[in-house]
Length: 137
Image (cartoon, one colour):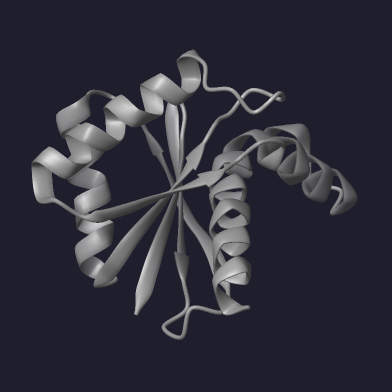
């Protein structure tokens, strides 16, 4: 069973996928957002290509645990996903995943330009890996 991980931003959507056994997450792409129809069609293509059964979406909570505007935008996006093709969606607290992605890329000595290109798919992989690790226990 494959699981997709999404890091939904205002300009891009980072996408990750699990291995078939659900142990590891791999960042696969970053979708440059255009409009809801395009964004959802791109996610649906990936969902179908990997025969995914679940989509884990990073939920951007405030540092105090409350939900703000970013979380509301994420919920709205997921409502459109569900209306389009009805995937099973689970949410994962994504606080600090983008920071962790930047830190990992700095440690890997990637250039600023390269970091900008891949940060969202790395964040999606971190979101998905956290979910997989919790479920493996």
